[in-house]
Image 1 (cartoon, helix red, strand yellow):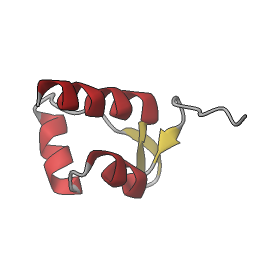
Image 2 (image 1 turned 90 degrees about the vertical axis):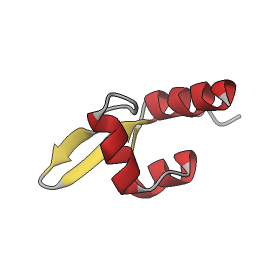
Image 3 (image 1 turned 90 degrees about the horizontal axis):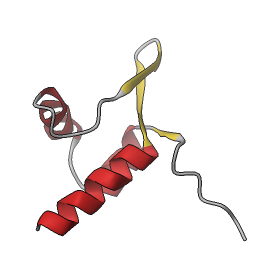
Image 4 (image 1 turned 60 degrees about the horizontal axis):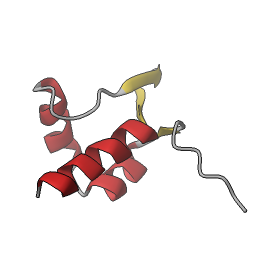
Length: 64
């Protein structure tokens, strides 16, 4: 059985697929404290901790 690593860093494409929210909206939500903060991966690259994004999605589903 393959173990799913929820603490890995995900990039833009996977974050968009998981959340269904475009980059601009996510960045605005992040500024407002309504979305997990991105982390710098060096240069202009950023990512998000997958477990934080999954928790955000689950919380959003619970609220709606």
